[in-house]
Amino acid sequence: MISAEKKSAKKAWEDAYLRIEQLILDSRLVPGDYITENSLAEQLGISRTPIRDAIKKLEEKGLIVSINGRKRIHLLTIHEMSEVFDIKICLEKQVVRWAIERGCPEEFEELGVLMGEMRNFVLNSSHAAGNEEDELQQWLEIDRRLHQLIFYMARAPKTESIIQTLNMQWHRLKIGSLTLEGRMKRSIHEHEKFVRAILDKKPDEAEQSMQMHLQTIKNEMIKLMTLFQYPA
Image: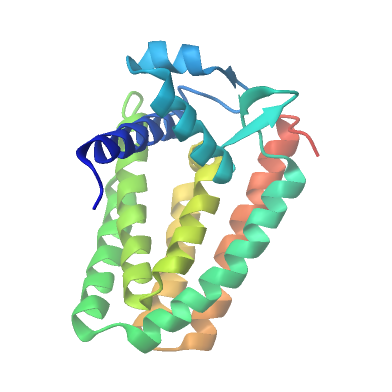
């Protein structure tokens, strides 16, 4: 039986982990930033022990690396980004096939509704000055829900966990790419292709459309990283 003290310690480091992870995802800690247990403890208002355990877990996830004994928010190289997407392509092609095989009728219906919501959002976006951040966050939320549903339909939690870990490593660049002119509209067309193939229960077409979608993102990410002189 786990003691109350051990439960409390586990909750403390898990809370620290989630809070540091969110700082990274929100770009309040950016790739290349050096961190210390003391600085994070002061920033978050918690003790160093859970911070230390959280950093170890974030290192396992690839979000923090150790450079000459110092901890740093990992700065993806272009080669690593390419590798991330090659892995994602292999896994997510299988995910859409599983979704077709394992999804129930209600889930297919919900997927169609979500795709319509995504389409309507882009068509009705104002793109007005000052609204960009709100619209970007709304898009990310709809996109998250749609992909989360496909993962749920696939009944593949281990695969989902691996992909989520990979996604965290390029989250900041994803946000940057979505601000490029016309990217959301192009993304809608890509999503419609693989979602339609899932709804029509055409696994080969779904795999091909998902691969094309991810390959397009990969190419755009590498162009963006090259432009901003990321390490090769």
